[in-house]
Image (cartoon, rainbow, N blue to C red; front, side):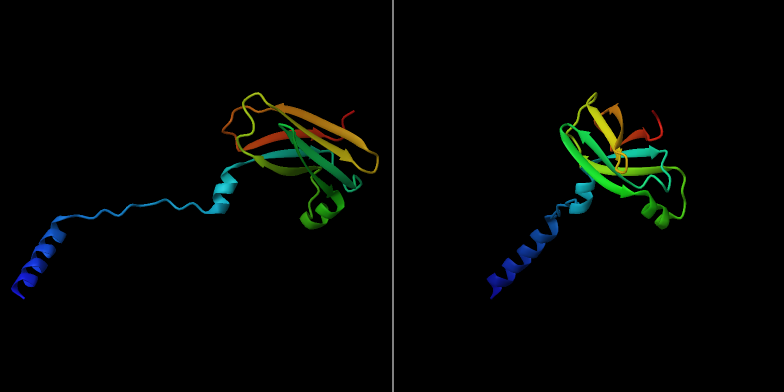
Length: 139
C-alpha cells in the first residue's frame, strides 16, 4: 500500500511539472472556403427599360461560359426602381485566370436578337470581382 501511495505522489508531482500544450486548429466553414475560391464577374447593362423584355447575358472566362436569362419587367416589379441600369453577376472558380487573360461579357435582347459585347482583361490574380460594362443602346 505504501508503494502505491508513493507512486501516486510521484505521478502527481510529475504531472504538475509537465505542461501539456493543446494544439489549436483553425476551423473554416465549407461555405466560406467556397466563397473565397470564387471570382465574380459583374456585368452592368446600361440602356435597360421596361420595354427591353427578356435578355440573355453570358460571360466567358478561360473557355468556361456561364449564362443567365433575365426579364426587365420582372426585375422592375421586384425593385420598384427603374434606373436604366442592371447588374448581372456570375461566379467562376478563382485561380483559373492569370493577369492579362481575356474576359468577355455579352448580352442578347431576345425579342430582336441584338447582341452587345464587351471585353476586358484580368488585371491581377487576387481580384475577387471584375466589372464589365455593356451599353445596350449603342450602335
